[in-house]
Image (cartoon, rainbow, N blue to C red):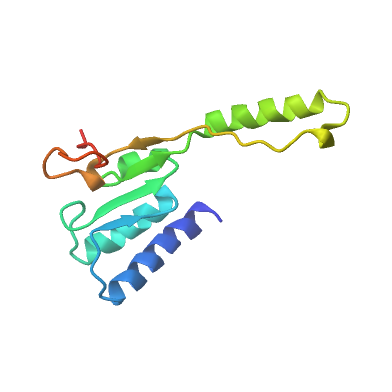
Length: 134
């Protein structure tokens, strides 16, 4: 899927969601481009982000910095994922018969980048809430 398809997915998804008349106070999109598409629909529908609906995506692409308000995003750490994948591949390649190696799990972590689209009205008071956007 290219960027235009993702943007269109955000537009279509947000449009369908609004047509259901279901009340919601937050929207999490699987990619930042989808979030930008959803943001455009919310704005045209008179829904204020973040006052009426908080919005977030994932991947921390550069384009989110140019959207208004800038969407909160989850940085999945692509560089860390790539480094880990290469290290695991090399360790398997160094073995004569890599099929004998047991499966394993690796975690590279992530970072939540809170931006204007999910800014809290006041600093959080309970554990687990998002920090205030700067």
